[in-house]
Length: 257
Image 1 (cartoon, helix red, strand yellow):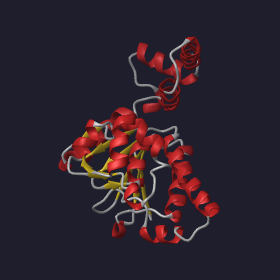
Image 2 (cartoon, one colour):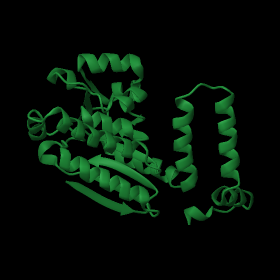
Image 3 (cartoon, one colour):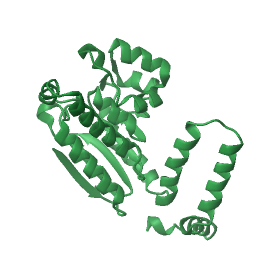
Image 4 (cartoon, one colour):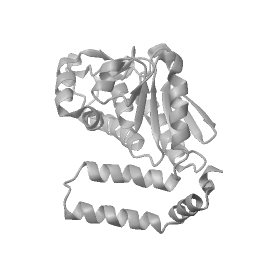
C-alpha cells in the first residue's frame, strides 16, 4: 500500500498500488495519514518526497471505494470526507518540507496531493485532471490546496470543464513548481533536496507557518508586528544563534553535520 525509504535525512514515501494506478481508498488514506504524522515527528527526517509506483502518480479515488460510498448515508459520507480532509491537512501542515514527484498522471484527489505539497516537480508529459464534475461530484476537500496553487480563475476553468492538461500547463498555472524531462527528474529533485536539508529544521518549520500567515491576510499593522515578532523570536532561539555563529565563523551549522 505504501513504501518508505529514509536515507540521508530524506524520506521517500511512495503510494504502492500500481495495479490500480495508486488510487486511494479509506485504508490508504488512513495509512498515509499515519505515515505522514510519524515522519513529521521523526527528528532524523529533514524532508519528505511523495511519489507513486508504477505508471501513475495517483488516479484519485479507488472505484471500488466509490462504489461502496454510493450506498453510504450522509453521516458515513461525512466521516469519509473528513478522513480525506484530515489527510490532506496533515500533508499541508507538516513541519518538514514536502516535495511531490509527479512522473505520471495525477487525477482528482491525486491533484490534491500534488497541491498540498510545498514543492511539486513533474514531467512535461504528466497528465492532470480535476474530473469530479463528470461524475456529478465536486472537488471539495482538495479545493483549498488546488485553488491556492492555481488561483481562482484557472480553478474555475479546470474544475468546471474537467479538461485533461499536461505538465507544461500545470507548471504555467502554478500546480507544478518545476518541470523536468523524465530522465532528469530524480536528479532535479535531488538538487532541490540538497538545498532543503541545508536549512535549519526549526527555521523551515517556522517559514512554512510564516507563509501561511502572510499569504492569507491583509498587510496592515497587525501583520507587520507579527512578522517583527517572528524574526525576533527566531534570532534568539538556539538554532538561530547557531546559524548566525556558524556564518560568522565560516563553518557549517550543527544541523548539517
